[in-house]
Image (cartoon, rainbow, N blue to C red; front, side, top):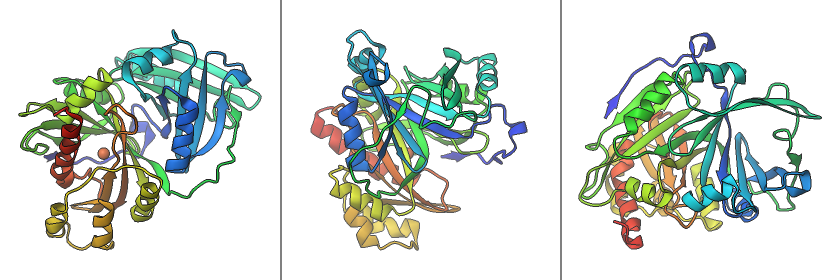
Length: 375
Ligand code: FE2
């Protein structure tokens, strides 16, 4: 592993593409109504806004869910020739949009285009009685896009066209706080192309490089590079498969997603034990970690605040870097295709991504692949 030390710029004047944060993540799904119910009851999200036929949107509907700083949109179409239906037919349920919140959408869009971004859609002003939002779109890996969202002149529930909507479901306190990082899987040989895209077009910095020696098991391997924006709020690790004896988890993803796309979304919590206990009680499946992992983990991470037996019981992984430690766990895929999943992460000083856990984790993923007959 190579760690590239850099001072993250906090001054927007030196940042080619200033980003205030993740605005939202949009999933195209087969049945948004049921998916919205799942993310509310299982993950503790709250329904805040909606658009669909009742609001004049005749071809599709979108449910907006929120939990602390995280906003998801779940969209599905009822028309067979609609773009959402085509996307779902090809990829299954998956992430279409990683939306970036910016101060000036037109300026950000122009910067990205001048630096080589491919246009998804031109800057467009959307209005309603709550004000205006300006949005534009640029393409990234696969069919995924980055929407650029300027909302400083908007006071509505979400975006123009959406109405406030709530659910009678009692909101559970699961404790998910914000999106820590979003990982993309790209085809063999294309990792560096997409790393260069984030560097050249969006002015991101390369944070960490993992080669196949860092991330390999007896059978499979992958390579990964992590890029981060100027203020460090946005982190996008990009994975590509590496040659191994058997099909890697990245290859399995690429096969079932039919191309590159978002592999996992890591969501931060302040209390992973409480969060994971509740998610497990709600029926969320996590990757199984073998008992042997916990036998020598303390030699690697030394003192931690949490009780090891509790972490072991919940299958939570631990890793340490120079600045502290982190606790993390990975769900199984959130839909029938072995594609997108969530990571739950609690950082206690560590700014890394759990390199020490990769081997144990990948062996666990391979066991699942083997059960699916895809190894
Ligand atoms: Fe991750």
